[in-house]
Length: 140
Image 1 (cartoon, rainbow, N blue to C red):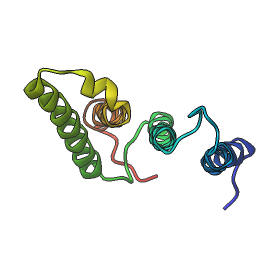
Image 2: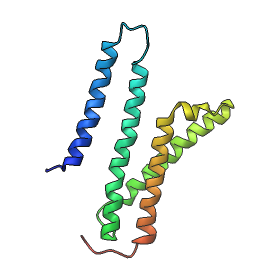
Image 3: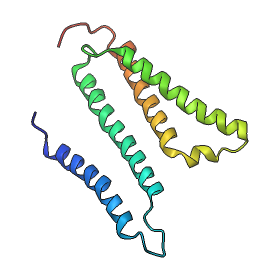
Image 4: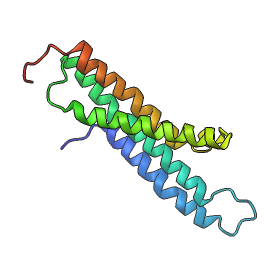
């Protein structure tokens, strides 16, 4: 498995951020300012997860577009992922509506963002599979 330089750069960058932040927390633990803390580290990790999701989806969209086909992968994974994204965001919205406080959406941007990214890409995959390339059944 040979990785391109850009992929190695992204992986190393993510690992460096994930490793450096706890070191910064430890190094500033006796500081009077709360510059680096564990909660912010968890937010960093959640945004890393959103970034990884983007990295995960984009190559498949491009591959499907170049091949003009979705042969070789299961639409069922996409349908299940779409359902999970919709239900996750729906839960967030319903919780906020029940409490009459929609700050839960802005207070948990990673959950909303992950569901939203998932929904958007799943819609793209469904359009590719059912509308754009539904007639292409040749093997690749």
